[in-house]
Image 1 (tube, rainbow, N blue to C red):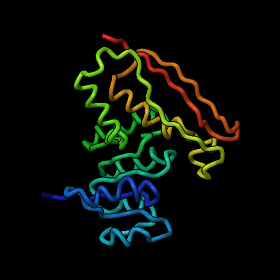
Image 2: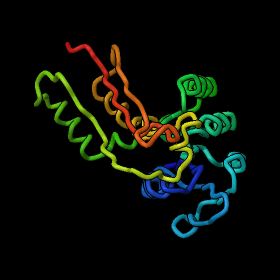
Image 3: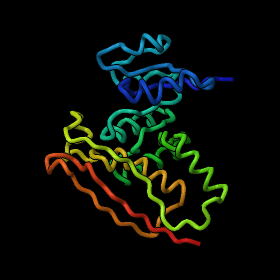
Image 4: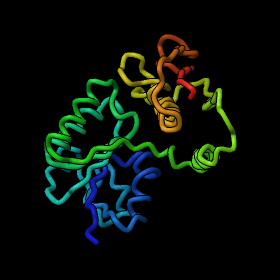
Length: 222
């Protein structure tokens, strides 16, 4: 079987925990390259991977077929577009982009170039969510009227990550971060809503991006 030669755009927590270990174990993939701007931490576990100092440099590697974009959300559109223009298939961390127009442009570009594009929604494979899907498919709950999907997080101090907490950066805040998982699970399980209501604000104050949200999705029950 021909292995998919893959490049990883970053080697922070996401790269170390959510991507590289699974690529390493999967028999269909080969980690060809990893971007580390100043360190070389990936060498210990992934010595076969070439270390690049920038995404742009990695995209010049003609052998790479798939690029995983796991950088901060504010860079997703830029790097995804550059990767597609370089002829690479892409998997983009959630949230895909900071707004719909960027997402639609990337999907259109991938379609025009005949390239693969997907969003990495790893929470679809969590054991609890898979069990819920089984219960739904088995029809054990009857006619469902209301479903609550939630994350409870108690954090009174800043995380120190501006791309997640700076209110002046589009795409920051819990709605784009954790909300991307919850909305995806709702849509995956029950389809698109006819209408919605959303309440979004920052409990830590206006100097921080949103850290609280409630979204109500209304669907037609048949």
